[in-house]
Length: 520
Image 1 (cartoon, rainbow, N blue to C red):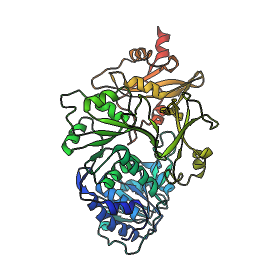
Image 2 (tube, helix red, strand yellow):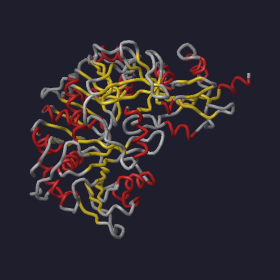
Image 3 (cartoon, rainbow, N blue to C red):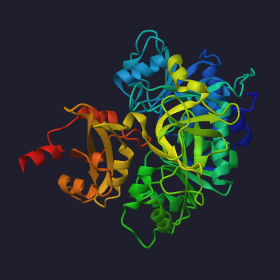
Image 4 (cartoon, helix red, strand yellow):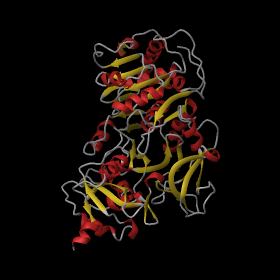
């Protein structure tokens, strides 16, 4: 189909090559996905959709998910990929809030869409199986395969680079998810900067285990691979035990990470073959300072750390030779960065405050929160994006992330950093993962509680654990409560869902330092 403007759709059409890709175990290529996207774009427009309308996706990582993404961008439609783990009331809320009339879903997820369906949804397109029988009145159910055999649309679809192309809902760990509106220009700028930052070329083969309903895999793996002609492997999930074998089997040269991945890989038993892999680089955040130097030496890779968000992509960055322990680097070529107080005034170096960001050129950041104008105005206070993160800068402009402001624990007049406690905990050999959070205290404010996951075959004694923390954290940051759990609740992007831990509160098996002291 004819395409106008420098958009995701036009770039896919111009750059698609036959370089082998592997998506959720299925061989494909950018060229094959591009050809299919042209037909699917025609099929989508043939359902009566008009450019600018929203289409929700409930698709797991697959070639179909990529084809649908590219087709929507080409047709001038706005993609709204939803977390495939969403259920019930939240799913109904997101479908309604998105304003989408059409939903594309995997076959086993389609019944959930129909059960949660708000009145606005009039069509459900089902991929990978039979459509559910007896849909509700007023809802058409069809097969995705019918889109794939449609004829490309003959009419030209005018798409502006600053048009919204995707709405990505944030994980909502501390409140209702917000839909982040991103333009073609913003997404391409992030992909192009990632290519430059990581020096990707056609000789690379990129690897990601992150879902396509977040920006990491989409704009820091898929689009960079497409723009450079690099190979690509997308897996649906992370496996610490199989990670390096996958890299060796598929000739991976670079992978995307989040800090928990590095820690889990570092905790695996060492072998003589650890450095025998084709990987040269890793891209992500954060680089846990307690494991990063050892990780790089052991596996023979260099790690690039970034700081940013769905709304403002890469605000700060640190290449391997620029990195300082615990720092997320200095401001990138894309954004200005400051640390400010409650009034919005910059604070001196070394003083903590809220991290704010502003783009250095037009079109880089998000265009606002979908259907949430008040939240957009609050986020853009003083014409700086308020990240909601607490940090500090040193005298050389290196940013140190301290905490989410909502994760900061207030205990007896002191602000306690959950990140500080978590970093100290995961540095212990018997702790695989940890989360620190505040629990309402009878003395007002909060008490500190931690949930810890034991390392493989380890047993954790809470009293001993707190004793070992005494030299690692401030006295007022020592946990009162310790809860040993099998796993932390995580979002698909591996962020801890602390709101769930807070809601569970002090459980019967939770160890209480104050109670033990009273018994003595």
